Amino acid sequence: MQARDSAKVAIVINDNDPLSVKIGRYYAQARNISPFNIARIRLPHDRPVLSSGDFKHLQKKIFEQIPSDTEAIVLTWRSPYRVDCMSITSAFAFGFARRYCATGCRPTAPNPYYDGGAESPFKKFRMRLSMTIAAENFDQAKALIDRGIGADFIQPQGTAYLVITGDSARDTRAATFDATQQAFGYRLPTFIVNAAGIRNKDNVLFYFTGAKQVPYLDSIKFLPGAIADHLTSSGGRLTGSDQMNALEWLKAGATGSFGAVVEPCNFPQKFPNPKILLKHYLSGDTLLEAYWKSVVWPGQGIFIGEPLSAPFAAPEENG
Image (cartoon, rainbow, N blue to C red; front, side):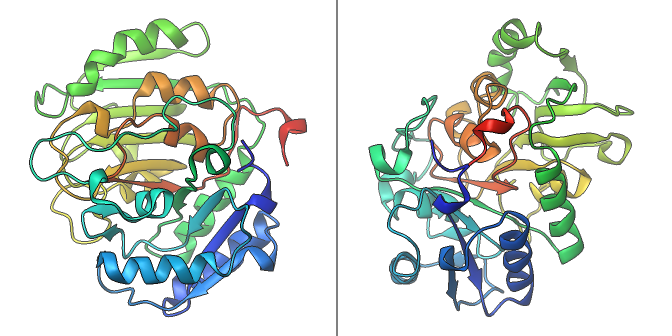
């Protein structure tokens, strides 16, 4: 897959949002992304939801500005995070389509890239993997970008924590935990923990749980390139949520996270599968690639973080 090649990555900057402008400029410089791969738009940044009609107009305008062989799209804002009933990252990946939405507890259209190989998703599926560098301020965004880049190729020796909280509505991924531990316990310490959350840990590389609020985040230290998320109804509502939103993981030091932007019900297929995510990330995929490969039904979930971080890639693989 060519998303690791900066020539295949496009950045989208919202000129109406000063923070988006600063993030976009810094990321382009840090990742050596060409000015020809930067799309500039103007849209309100104080509302969380775009209409499908506004999005289609926006997408057309962006695609007119970026190379036709672009593989990955990097957004540079936390709002808007949703397009009608889809997340904004899924809308950019697939184009807006109601088959990726659901009213009530129903499946959505599947991700053709799920558990995929190294092929180009744009060439094969006409989808552009998308992620947003979301932050509340520039210092947070810069720290996220810096640790994502700093994690490249370092082969970190960290620990994976698979947490069962006792919240039956949000513990549905626990069915995958034994298989995850069996598959990767030889590669890195992988613990299944029965608790509200982990605390006083300083080598966290993966953290998957289910909860409205995740406690003790101020007592743990994430390694560069770490991935963490929680299964809950509105973790992807990056502004104004009554549950913990996924930005809290990044503020605590994670490099990537995921959350639902509309009520997904507790289908584990609508959230990252830890076993699949670890399989691809530990094999050298970028954070963007591994995360996208781990969700069967991603239409209602948003991917946030530093997309090109590749801690387990070999240096010669870098484009």
